Image (cartoon, rainbow, N blue to C red; front, side):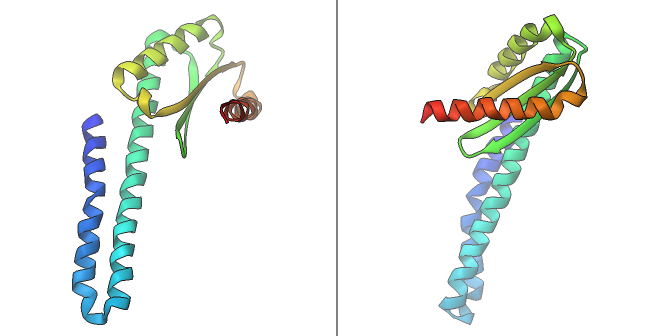
Length: 154
């Protein structure tokens, strides 16, 4: 996956070439039209590739976390990946893990570090719950913890 991410990073710069091509072929309509079309082509391609890069990173993080959890225990779990400005928030909701929770936490952290994906993660949260009915309550609690963490850093 790291190779795909690198390719997407380089491909983003292809938007500049696309913008220039758009400008070149529309300049016969005048600069007032050609320049905005070139800019729109550049920015549009940049945003499109950036979203794919983020999706690829999130998918890779989820796969690594899932593999790490399954290597420790057959506990049911849900993984939530969110993108915010400083980085990615990765959350794991374990269902009935009990005493395996800390072992799973350590294994997931280790696997993320070894895979090189840890640098993309801004916050990692893991919680254990009895059943899926507690999901909304746990999401709210984790959101509150995250807000407190952000406030303490600023």
